[in-house]
Image 1 (cartoon, one colour):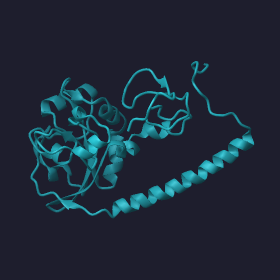
Image 2 (tube, one colour; image 1 turned 180 degrees about the vertical axis):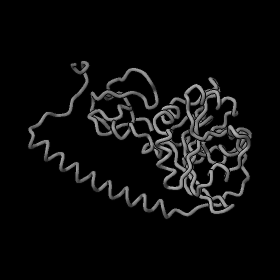
Image 3 (cartoon, one colour; image 1 turned 90 degrees about the vertical axis):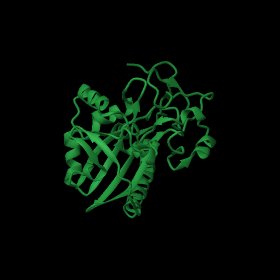
Image 4 (tube, one colour; image 1 turned 45 degrees about the vertical axis):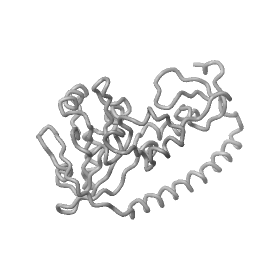
Length: 262
């Protein structure tokens, strides 16, 4: 199969030239790995904040508090499952993540390390249960409908409920990045991590936007291929196939008239 017309290719070199270039890149990869190890070490030393608010969720077995979500373990990883009001369904990216990662085999690895996984969406429980049944999912999934949970952890933006904040930026800071004001609403990607000690619960970590990249395994495979993720924000040579980030559909070639999206 030939590449489509106009699609670029990496430069062709000899085996010796390729090996030299690969070793040069390997040195950078090893340095990045060391920096990531150091970053993970720093994350393990991040301080924590006591959660004093009494959040109430609803799950298949009825009402549940935040401590209940731990299911007897000491650590809790929450995936903030984004919801589309116009279709009353989960968002496509969260759905893809659930299909790939929120499986019994995957969750078993977390359980071995005393970590409970839970998804939380602001949709009413009947909507969640209908969507869960449609996909045959069994992972723990709770509704935060009627609570402040999504707004307090800044994954649902609604200025009538709480001041807009996302990825540790205020509304003014977000607007300064070029985001249009009309985009600052609804659900946005995020996760949150908690620690329980007896009856005390602490918030230890939350990440948003591209801070979640490392959790979506296909990205790691795509990053090793010649054309990468093929998204418009990437720094790729001209002629590399790309499409707008998060947008399905046909890939386009990156040219001088295209710009990066962040």
